Length: 162
Image (cartoon, rainbow, N blue to C red; front, top):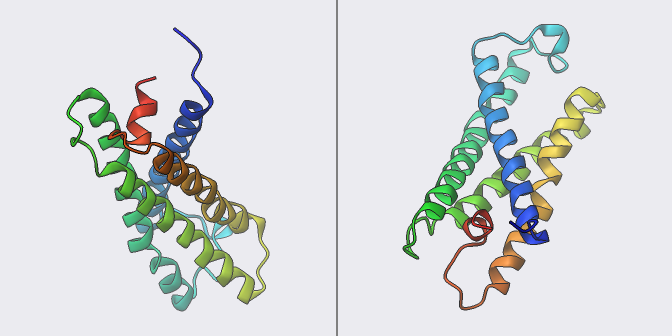
């Protein structure tokens, strides 16, 4: 078996980052909804009802990002196991939607913390990751899809077969 090519490694890195992020969203919201976050590890003014509302305003966005991301990963794997060209054709658009929603969530949080003047690395680092990691992944997937020309296979599924 030959070593994976650069494109294949790129797609695998995107898939891994999406999986970690999407599962992380679900874990964070499970912990938050169960009120398991110790106040000393929470964001500034955690007990303030307005701040709590602000935090929970991310719930639909994060869950939408997670569900579309996990479903796109499922479809990419499903497509890889099937030979029909149309099966799993939704996974690239769902991947792009998930990555866009993830970046949007990071941008919203970073903008908010900037406006508040709160520079805690505890909240900045994860939100900068959410903002930034999807950008090169989106560019990469769009370039790869555009470069596939007349091919009918999707970049995420094609890389999984290598």
